[in-house]
Length: 143
Image (tube, rainbow, N blue to C red; front, side, top):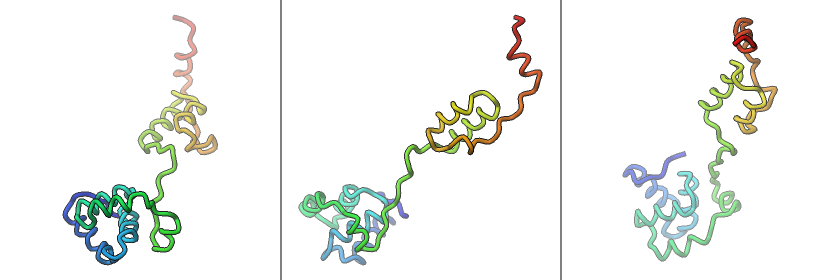
């Protein structure tokens, strides 16, 4: 998947795709393919085509309410980029939560809460054993 931006080489790629997809004759189809290829919204695809002067404001205004449908993507043979399933939790945060659980700083229940349903209890690694001396310090009533 490519990234759509103002960069000149990407502009060239968009223009090339526009020509390959007969954008002048079938602007909606070409815009759908370009949007899917670059993984951008319908509005963003139309804005980029307008910025590149491949379509004018009148054409953009006419196309904008004609949102692409699943059938459009199927007919044109393109796949829309799938979005990550919510919630998205970074690998760093996942590692930190697991490390806190393994070192007995948080419970399994709390670790799973922090991981927001992206893990289940059986996926958790076993916690590290706590040295007996460490437990004495925590459980000591002599202070």
